Image 1 (cartoon, rainbow, N blue to C red):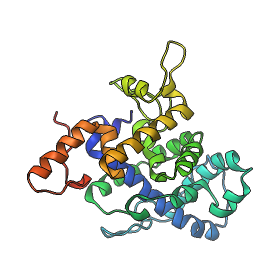
Image 2 (spheres, one colour):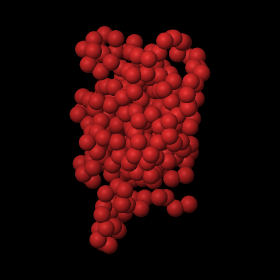
Image 3 (tube, rainbow, N blue to C red):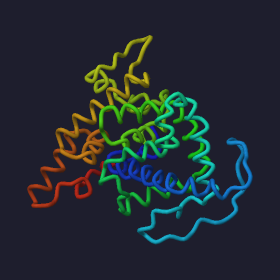
Length: 270
């Protein structure tokens, strides 16, 4: 499990997921412009020297406020170089989207596919954008699996933002295990894994099987969406548990308060 969530997973998992998706919107929308202006090429694994500082931003700026042009170019090149070999036979998809980041962004559905401004999202986005080395390692690791998670989300016609959840759950590491015995890309605990058909034995753990665990995670998230009526609440319930989310909804409803995700009190008490 990502150490970012070690204290209060249910409170920040959605802001983190939306922060990542917002960050990718910025990266995708600026990559082509950056590449057209480049005059020198370099190895993907070679750190490029920064040529200018990040631009100052207002609270509503979703452009390149947190990553400068060289960093965006490096991150886009890293994913493209490691991922496109997996889909090079799908010429139609390559022609339509150009790279996997753009394909991922094309399937954004939450909030109408538009960036959501919230101070909690901005705070979590800052955590990522201040750690370029981590982003590079994460991108390289995710490149082994993210094509499958995006393609499966597309096949099911669900928001492709959900393919970013393993960034928060496990840093896209199928071998990751939490202190609560949650395992795999999607960090299933043993009991929930069994409910969703993930066999676990001394020789095989379906929670670490990328294909099976992705199926189970999307089945679980879809069930939660059907129960609560929104993907935001589905993500909250995935982390906090549906019982905790329902209790928070009931408490707000009893006080005549809104019951959307941003209005609920889901912070775990320590």
